[in-house]
Image (cartoon, rainbow, N blue to C red; front, top):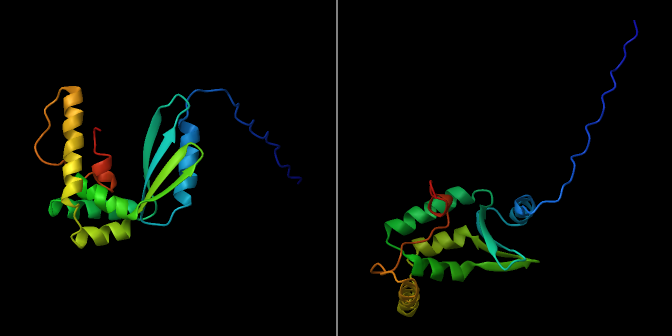
Length: 164
């Protein structure tokens, strides 16, 4: 008995069509950026567009989401706010760029050490944050809430809340 292997036609390559949607390219770049960073890192990535606008994307490397949420829970429990988030973030942020893509990488273990170690923003930074908020409120005709806003987050639960 003779066996024959059916000949299957190879699938045609997908047709490339021009598009104004930058998302597929951004997502491909995002995958490469994430792969280039160490585990337990939070990434704040800004894609600058030719029209002068920008799109911000957040990503985490392996282990980053759980550690980021743990840090956020600790920070909120001890009352850290956005001035503290700026202070701690500035201490550890690693800036880089790829063409029109700006990358801020935050290794989360040192952030955790600062949160558990009680690092807080100095008063002049806290005052500066409040001045910026007052200025924005005056410009938009709003009344600012008292105090400094909450810790902004390094984990997906605070950064990407449901229904955001």
